[in-house]
Image 1 (spheres, rainbow, N blue to C red):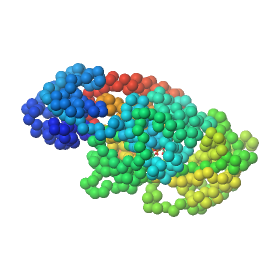
Image 2 (tube, helix red, strand yellow; image 1 turned 135 degrees about the vertical axis):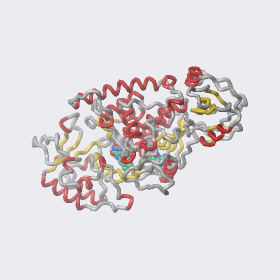
Image 3 (cartoon, helix red, strand yellow; image 1 turned 180 degrees about the vertical axis):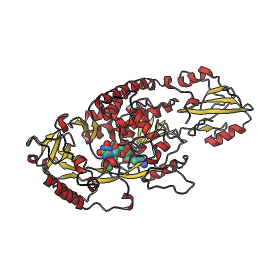
Image 4 (cartoon, rainbow, N blue to C red; image 1 turned 135 degrees about the horizontal axis):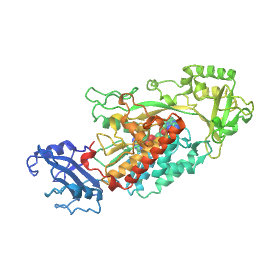
Length: 587
Ligand SMILES: Cc1cc2nc3c(=O)[nH]c(=O)nc-3n(C[C@H](O)[C@H](O)[C@H](O)COP(=O)(O)OP(=O)(O)OC[C@H]3O[C@@H](n4cnc5c(N)ncnc54)[C@H](O)[C@@H]3O)c2cc1C
């Protein structure tokens, strides 16, 4: 039986039913010809119109029986004639190999209660992009954002798409994995990527933005869309029987919504295991749910530009790649060891129970890196290789890099210097860095919660929930890591939600593409050890033939990815062409 659980089944008297009630009802029904079972029953919702598709099979018969594709409206007792022009995808289904099921069926469609076809929770990076992608396809969106009524521990404004830490959207170097993802986003027409490029600040080969200008532009663009109704309120419920919903509430999802997500995921099949450091064990042996995970990301400190002693630092790009936009603070061995000792001795913010968790490996606080050995910082955020000091012609013992924060270039962040030290301790220790002796801090490093679901246990590669395909997750909460990845999954969720509204089955992007690899990872990684991922070549499938040269291998991978992505995109922008019969696209 391929009965999608998210669908609204409608009784003859207009009563709504969930799947189980519907199936039991159909089995007991006298209207249905005897000895016949129903398969692939699906109700596609277009505003006030429902189109029901499905297959009836004679019991024991190996061949499909007759099928139906029937349009319903919100009141008449006799169904209206099927409008093939309005629903080409269903018409195709209808005309291809099936005939309509003929019996009078005054199904009513009390839903939707609002005019919005897609509800999006969170107007951060993912939610804003998702809303835009729906709106540009003519879909009515309700976008819920809780700020400024309720804020998070990291956001400081009421703007949409606020960048809470670094201002970098990663490499623009051709044939790198972050470039590939951005290139695919550009081809689909990502709003946020375009606006990021409009607000770019110099950052060598990286795309860094003026965060204030960027958030302002995103807010303006979204607010001016007539199809998007913005509601400044906290979402606390998600109803799988209501309209299509994209959950894009981010790593700092409000508590009430987090509980709701826990409840929703508890309706799932038992997962093979939650993320390794989950602090939300199942509530009871029966209430087995794929849990959320809370862990902590760290924010890097920012200093005022004119408080940096320029006589002690130099501008350079690593290996002279790109323009020399980074400020480099060089350290001698003695300076490094003194800094290292001070860092280890500095007082951290008091740990509470919930903080005794594993950190995300790629975002470790510097004091945590230092605790792993005296040289670990020199192989991490203080790596000096490729950063020759032009004044000495030599590579320093260690380097702290500073990246421009805004277009005015009046502030710089300490790259990779996220930490969990008390503010006074940070000021004392970080002022030991040459050039920062008199640094004024615009913002200190901090640690914040990160909430994400166990994607492989819960999601399809289309970011739809396996158990509730009307609900999609996007952004950091679906199990990706990073600004660009969050925007990318928002973009995908928006496209897929729009496809659902139009009655098309969402088709994930090809596995060879960056998009396809990212969503494949989210849906198919090891559920027992799931950790959010950035886009890297590791996520992409290997090429058929072995290429030793790394650069050439990456070039070929990018070439293949874009070729396959373009084919998929062509079909996805022509939804009729990608319509799958329901029986092929079952959960
Ligand atoms: C402290 C911190 C620092 C980070 N630093 C970086 C970094 O430097 N570089 C990087 O690439 N990534 C970083 N990340 C990771 C991630 O890329 C960002 O958090 C990114 O903003 C995620 O995008 P998003 O759309 O998933 O969530 P967000 O951009 O956070 O958007 C979620 C939105 O949902 C809203 N919301 C939450 N709950 C509700 C509710 N119940 N109802 C209505 N609205 C709600 C929030 O107010 C917010 O606007 C960091 C994350 C954190 C937490």
